[in-house]
Image (cartoon, rainbow, N blue to C red):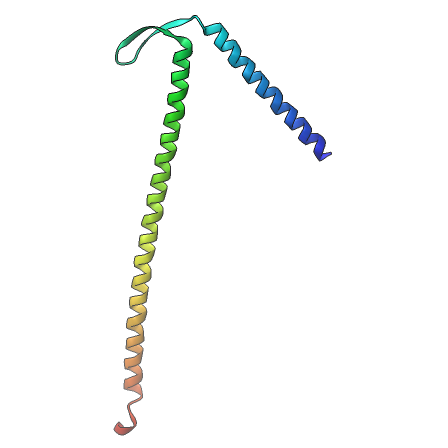
Length: 118
């Protein structure tokens, strides 16, 4: 039964891929001679719609990658800061443990005077 569902899932994915590819071909054929005038800090006239769509898609993908990269850098910076804070906290704990051991040793020395002083 599981294999049947997997087979249906694979064929549905194939149908969707063929539909998307067909849609892309229809868009290219329908817009191959269309031109447009756009303003991007300057007026550009007679720009082919296909080139405009390709430039828009490419820039969107590039911006998405840059945003993801920046998010990863900020996440790494946060981890480094947390690691540094943890290191400082461990150093403080080690110093406090050392001081506590010294105080306990002093207290033992006061509570148990050497045999000569008894």
